[in-house]
Length: 106
Image 1 (tube, rainbow, N blue to C red):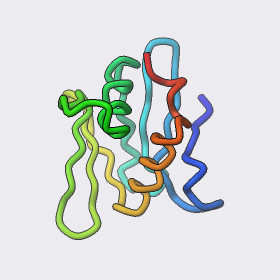
Image 2: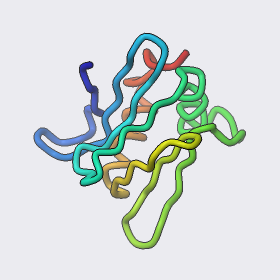
Image 3: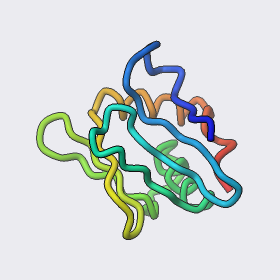
């Protein structure tokens, strides 16, 4: 399964990555020591993209929580938690707003 990162993430840097399988979208952070991978339906990922593009204010099924300091946590349903940093998250959001991940949405 090939992983895609935002073009706003520097070459060789750790980043939020997205991949797809036939009926699911997978999200991970290349530097997350737990190796967690979130799995969501394409429609749920599409809802997250809509929120990040500020097309809707409805909450997305993929929860994004900003913790103390530089920590950002992603959670989908009863799955694990993917942890990233604010700068890596910001690079992902820039890629979302540029349409780089639209093909993963249902």
